[in-house]
Image 1 (tube, rainbow, N blue to C red):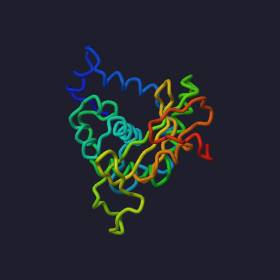
Image 2 (image 1 turned 60 degrees about the vertical axis):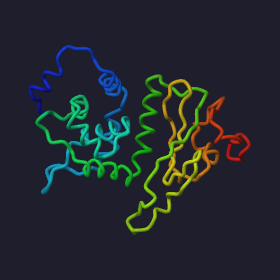
Image 3 (image 1 turned 60 degrees about the horizontal axis):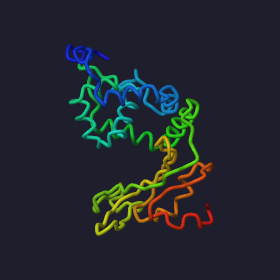
Image 4 (image 1 turned 180 degrees about the vertical axis):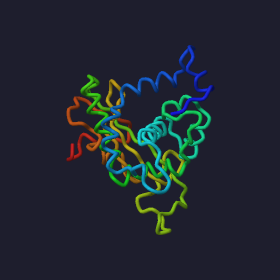
Amino acid sequence: MQLTFGDAEGLGKRKQTRREIFLAEMEQLVPWRHLLGLIAPHYPVSGRPGRQPYALATMLRIHLLQQWYALSDPAMEEALHEIRTLRRFARLGGLDNVPDETTILNFRRLLETHGLAARMLEAVNADLVRKGQSLRSGTIVDATLIAAPSSTKNTDRARDPEMHQTKKGNQWYFGMKAPIGVDEFSGLVHHVRCTAANVADVTVTHALLHGKEDSVFGDSGYTGADKREEL
C-alpha cells in the first residue's frame, strides 16, 4: 500500500470517528488468517499472464465493508474513492488503483460459487466462541426482505424461479428473504438462511437456532413455531 501526503495527514492525532472505532474493532475480531485460508485455494494466482488480480486480503476486506455498510457494488467502488478510512481498512493507499464494481461483483460470485459464505460465518462464530463471545441461551429470529425489480431475469432470460412476490402491510414485494438467528445478549448473528420472499417465516425457524436455547424471540410471523414438528 502506497501512502500519499493526504494519507499521512489523516494518520495524525485527532479524535477517532465512530467508523474508525468500529473498523478498529473489526480488525481485531475478524479471524483474517482463517478466512484467507478458506478463500485462497479458489482465488486467482498472481504472476500469470494477463491482468493481475488484486490482493486477496484487499478483496476480502472490501467484501466485508460492503456487507457492514449495506453498499451496492457501484456504491462500494465510489466509497473507496471518496472515504479515506475505508481505503485504509482495505489496505489501499492513495496511489493504488481501486477495484471497480465488476471486480467487486466477481469476488462475491466467487464466494457464492464455492459455497464459502456459510463457511466464513461458521469460522467467525467459532473464533468468537474461542475469544469468550460464546452464544447464550436466547435467540432472536427475524427476516429481512431483499427486493428486486419484478422484471429481474436470470441468465436464461426467464424470471428467476427462486424469487417470488409477497405482501407486507399494503405493499407488494418481489425478491428474496434473509431469515437470521441472532444471539439475544451479544447481537451476534449465528445463522443465516436465504428463501424466496413468499416463504412463511415460521417454516424456517428451526434452521435459525443453535440448539442450546432456553428461549426464542420473534414477531408475529413466528407464531406457532413451538408447535411445529421440526422444533
